[in-house]
Image (cartoon, rainbow, N blue to C red; front, side, top):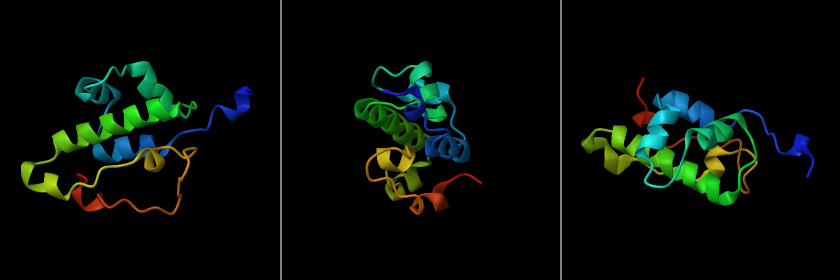
Length: 106
């Protein structure tokens, strides 16, 4: 595989983490799976990941966001899918709008 096709540039997960105020350390800390800082960094910078790792990062993002929400707003949270966080994932839609915008801290 050509290395040029494995780097996809900054991913939507980067903007999502900034909008929610999440750090790589929070994702690693909140993950119930074996997730490390290097994997999170690769996900943010656009290195092509396997489907399994994309899903693992997505679960970590969802868990970190869910735990940061007040109990009253947790029922309104719509979990993200890997196709929302990675622009090279099958089913990615660049015109998708985030249903959780109202829950994001300002």
